[in-house]
Length: 230
Image (cartoon, rainbow, N blue to C red; front, side, top):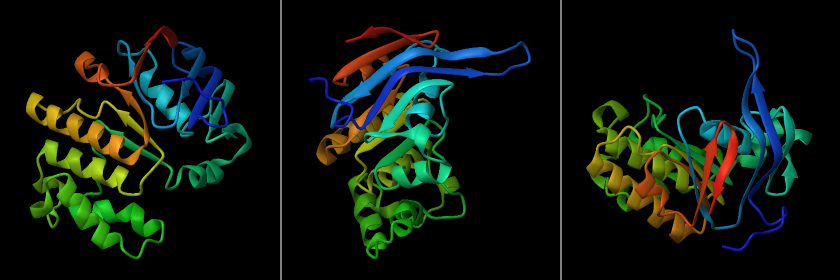
């Protein structure tokens, strides 16, 4: 997919560095990293453990500010926004899916999906939640709580919750990492199908090379630097 300008890119990182303190001294997590995603593009980020993959998502989503460099989300420089401003910018436009599901334990599957829709003021949140339960093949599990669902079912609910608001950008950090092979394949297929249908851009962090090959482009990190962009 062709490269785009910063204004058109859902997310653009230029010369980004991230250094964090540790007992042994300052640790450089990201080093002079450039990264862009085009609208609707699906980018897989790979690399060994500790290479900075999850930190890239944290910085790109505005969950953590870089030590140096510029991060633009939908054309806005995140350094110019406070935490509330970054949250407002993400709301309805950016969704995240994690390896560990992060469902709210005191809410049913349907309520978990409806929650971000209700926050956005959607009066049809309950109806949309039921529709998304059906889309991920779990219409019979809407009244179940997370502890009553398998890992694969929980991740399908997390995926439905992330995509129900129709975000322009989805970050997925090892979304199949806690699943067996069958459930991983099911969740991966759903994710790519639903992202393609919605037109959302996808930034996928994964150790799974077969999953990474399904993306439009791969970026490989090592020691916080890009060693492959293809």
